[in-house]
Image (cartoon, rainbow, N blue to C red; front, side):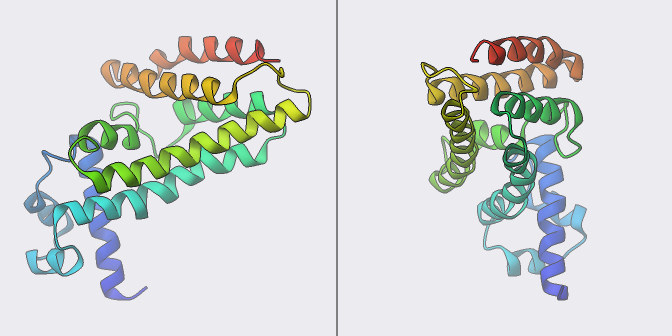
Length: 196
């Protein structure tokens, strides 16, 4: 990796860490520069503005990380209902990238920036819709194989589960404890078994 590419990646990684912990709007460019130990000129060489850097974080840090965490596991497990449960259990209880005290970074960006920035909204919508479509496809494939009831409305189920996931992340954030996740996971397991 060339020095310029390495500098750009360092800026993105350090900026992401600051933003994930504090929030996008309260994290200043000066704070990012101080943390990364690059000059202001180097920062603006790579990014014309803070928002350009924010979009790069979504596209170059969040998308690959969340693809590994949210999408690839669904593609590996045969039973669709187990796959969905195991994915969400892993995301809440085991994943090292997602911190209980900070919640879900995609959800945080969505709540903080989507209403104010169309480009952020579009990038986050792309990220969310990829996950939603794959989970819907997972259920639909299960219906074809007779592992999920035919009357199940896959889109409705997945929206319900995704809403619950983002909501329970906030409970974990408030209590700074994974204990908050356990009742939701128990109910999720029961709900999914009811779809057979």
